[in-house]
Image (tube, rainbow, N blue to C red; front, side):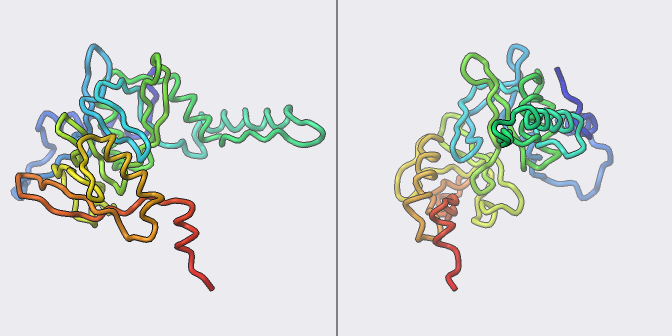
Length: 260
């Protein structure tokens, strides 16, 4: 079942023109352009299913291997969304009928999360175009990727790329597939095509290595400004060291609070 999303049809049409090279208007200033984020995302169609064509780091805790079947991609529903309203009714009913000793049994999940999960579990896209269109529409931000887990059960993964870096592995180690505008990764100087070879002086051969070292920096590098990352520059431009900010941590947030 395909869920209708505002602007998705238009975005899919625009994306199809971009994929085929068609343009609405020619410009004398046209020159080499960076492909849009949707085109850079490694999704393809195999046997009628949308699958990852390369391993990706979907967030700081999760690596999805190449070949993972993808179901859909969402943002949290707006307050006036129909599914949101229905989810809110369910929360209200649970609170009304789930009282014990005069204390309401409050549903811990928000209506938005309930609506998101219910959409996710009944939606499967069999084309790469909706994924690419959604990424282009929202710039890769505030999205949730739904992929097949054990025995095909849908699993929702927050799409939260470390410092705005979409990292993939096409068999040659972690590589920067995309850098979000205005992100920490962009400010640090990362470019599409940079290949990460070491972090904090430790070699990085796979996305799992990057994820492990990045997660470890949460607790081991609180007093430092960033984690040194050695990269092979895109286009064979040699090597360089970038500084990637360590992920936030509870302890770090306390240490960073100003003392009065």
